[in-house]
Image 1 (cartoon, rainbow, N blue to C red):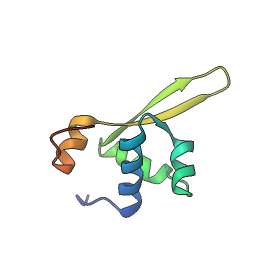
Image 2: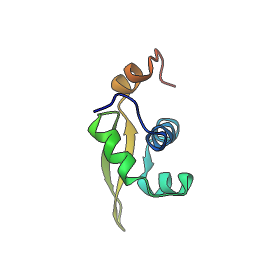
Image 3: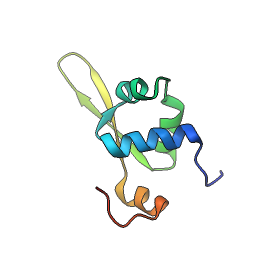
Image 4: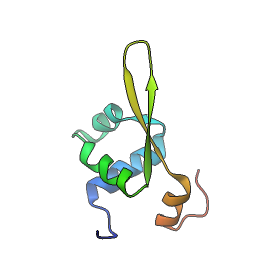
Length: 80
């Protein structure tokens, strides 16, 4: 597996890091395309995690950045 992320994965990760917790639907709306492939790749690399949040209407998945792995990947010392 290559160490570099695709442009789509980077865009998706940026949105998640900035707006977390955020649902897949919200990410799709911001990007204007379906992001399930990018999200799967980010989960596989452990850069994000998905958590289920149950509401009265539906169960929705929310994405959140894995702070330590995310920070190491980008060489950050501080996470907003």
